Every structure is written in structure tokens, then in C-alpha cells.
Length: 245
Image (cartoon, rainbow, N blue to C red; front, side):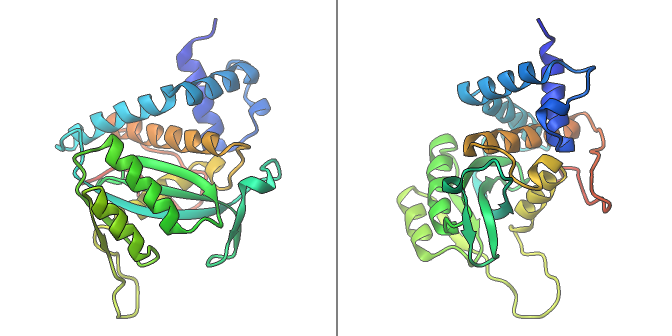
């Protein structure tokens, strides 16, 4: 019987370093055991439950209510590895990436409220509607959502039917870098995710396993924030890693 803390450490190690499961160091539990727990916890909802409990505690630590009232939506396309079936990937015509797309909904701290992983060919609008459905179901107090110009008007109409006011944040007309109000928080969330080498490319055979890796990455980010520990990064440049209001 292995210590469950060591199982969690092994999952986080794979996520952070990007190594194959079978390359886990020998001082951690056997990789088959670790993967079995990883798959079991994803399937029975344990992974998301742990993530959601950490999110509620992180919100309270930042003086917020556990339940948010607003959300931000965005999507990110990433390349896939060779073990991903052709039927589970596609081409993002706008970004010219063949792979998968991560559709995220966060709160105004950048903490994850919902995630859907699809083929990269799925339009942001289609993913956005599913995100709004998930948010409305799991976070009924959310009444406001911000999206970028890539989302079509049908997302606004869909949100209205759910009681969520969807606002499109337009880019400034002036040149140069301008952080978009209410939108930069989700860009920072993508940055947090990309600090995990396993998420730099989608290596998971199943989309739901990709979603689980995203939940584990955010759980690690939040636990480090709660304990005031710095977050190591595999990248040369080290961006902001702390959660701030």
C-alpha cells in the first residue's frame, strides 16, 4: 500500500517535468500504480473535487466569497503527440496549429471554473457555449462573462438564456501592447498552465485525461499560493506565478 501523498507527488512530477510515466524516479511509487490512481481519480471525479476545494480555499484566502459571480472565457490551441488519435485532433485554421484546443472559464482571479478539451478545429464559439453551460450548472451565482472578439454573437445569446450577461472586450485601436481589462487574468492562467511541461504539448490519449492534467496543474499552483511557496518553471524566462487580486 503506497502513501497517497506520494502518489500525488508523482502525478505532479510528471505534469511539471513532462516525462513519460515509465520514467518516474525510483524513489516514487511504481509508474503503473501512479497511472492507475491518476486514471481512477479522473474517472470518479476525485481530481476535480480536490481542485474545486483548493479553488474555494484560495478565493477565501484572497478575501473573496467561495462562489464567484463573474467569469472570463478563452481558448488555447496546442500541438499533440503521436499517441493522440486523428479523430481527437484537428486544425485551428486561424493559428495554423494541428492538435487540440483547451477551452477555459476562470473567475476574476484566474482560477479555473470549467475546462473542455476538443479538437483544435472546434470553433471558440462552440466551446464557449459548453463552458457557459458548465458554469451555469456548477456556479449558479455567475451573472457576468467576458470574452474576446473571437466569440460570435450566438455566445451572447446563449449566455442570455442562462442568465449570464456576456460582454465582448474589444482590442484597443492604438498600436503597442495593451493588457485588456478583465481579460489579462485568463492569459495569466494559460501562462500558469504552460509552466508545466506536460501541458506544453497535449500528450494525453483521451481528452478527459488532458482536462485532468489541467486540473492537477491548477491544483499545484493554488496549493503553492496558499503555502506561499515559489513555483519552479522549466522555461528560461520566469513570469509571474503568484495569484494576486
